Length: 70
Image (tube, rainbow, N blue to C red):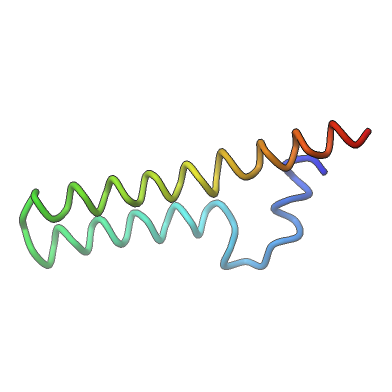
């Protein structure tokens, strides 16, 4: 399975663009609601962790797993 097949098998709400858009919306919403860095920065860090996991780590692991099978 290459990276394209991974995203082709996911629904629209689990595509890279929706993951990025949701993260940006959450961080922006945190800032607009609270106007405090001590709250927005940890939220942003969690979002970046989430992005890293779902957009970088998982696709690489699946691609590596697939290459080991062939």
